Amino acid sequence: MTSQFDAIIIGTGQAGPSLAGRLSKAGMQVAIIERKRFGGTCVNTGCTPTKTMVASAYVAHTVRRAGGYGVNVGGRATVDMKAVKARKDAISSHSSLRVESWLRGMKNVTVFVGTAQFEDAGTVRVDSERLRASHIFINVGGRAFVPPLPGVDGISYLTNSSMMAVDFLPRHLIVVGGSYVGLEFAQMFRRFGSEVTVVEKHSRLIPREDEDVSEAIRDILVGEGVDVRTDATCIRVEPKDEGVVAGIDCREGEPKIFGSHLLLAVGRVPNTDDLGLERAAVAMDAQGYIKVDEQCRTSVPGIWALGDCNGRGAFTHTSYNDFEIVAANLLDGDPRRLSDRIPCYALYTDPPLGRIGLTEAEVKRSGRSSLTGKMAMTDVNRAVERGETQGFMKVVVDANTHEILGAAILGLNGDEVVHSLLDVMYARAPYTVVRRAVHIHPTVSELIPTLLGTLGSPAGL
Image 1 (tube, rainbow, N blue to C red):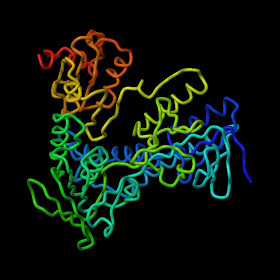
Image 2 (tube, rainbow, N blue to C red):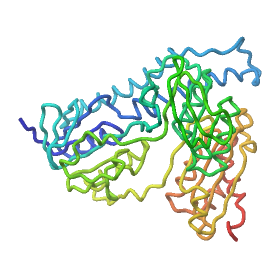
Image 3 (cartoon, rainbow, N blue to C red):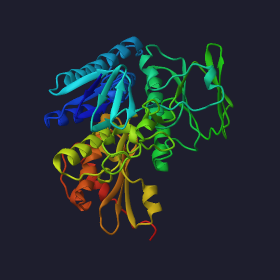
Image 4 (cartoon, rainbow, N blue to C red):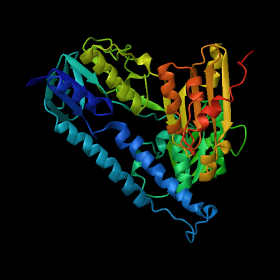
């Protein structure tokens, strides 16, 4: 039996449910398919649960520093990992159930639970059900990439997803991957009490960032007792005494690291390998990402790809923006495009890094004349009062147009403060608009005008 719909949505990550809501309100009959947990990566194994755990780690770290604030907590702080996990599970489950309840309560929307596979460009099978529609939207997200390290098939390892089941304190956690996911877990579990070693193949952590950002984050982690090993050009693993040993070729340090647990955090791959996209003739790139145009349309008319699986963004906020772009073009006559958005994201170490636009290195490679301003968080009264003065703020502007090209705020509330610059970038206003603004004291944001006042001479002149 085949059921006919106006639209089929595969996946309930950030884009899918909101799109279902818009399409249903437009009078379309919608089928939405979820194979496992409603809400996608963000709600179940990404943003929501990990930032909940980051919050627990922050409290543990603060309690240990309480004496410096004149607060006597009496004795040494201990962490109950089962309680940490229970809190995380409760918050994550609540979010997932809200998404499912929202979808099941939508008018004109039918929820299917199972694995979706294309039979052709207009037909999707969900287990024994066949669904047809003239509009199909793919929102299947991604998962952790497991690198082909020598010996990896013979050991137990963790990924960001399986870390969600950890309710104990690893004695020594080896993190392979010195980028965003790996560093968040590294600091988190060090604060919980684990010994932690980060192994990164590049010469520095988070190599896509500017060198000063990488070095500052390394200093923060090392200062908390995280061992960082870079230039790990060859990594191999093997089981050892109910744990794991990682062999690494680095310029410095011991060639072997003995750990109790191994976390692989070296990137993501799209969940497109079992969709049967070849039967629908949907084009993909060599990594399995679905090729899309500026409006998230695939190579096949009537099929769109949104979120992580299209390779045009790897964040919850970019996935939601994909929904906005698709809905604007389909329903509102508003020709929004992927290229309209400005790159922005955060690294949720403590302190966090808020990043927008281009890095300083990218601006220099572009050849344009630019101005750079930078100031340490030790100059921010709010940070001094909080006793959290690590990091710095940096902004790069076009020397000719005075438009803001990019910024990095590594410091107290950096993930929030950076939006004051991001909004000005969207307005395409000159940096002088913010430079002359009067902000509330004492805040971190009040130093943004001061930061802009530190702009030097045009780079390269």
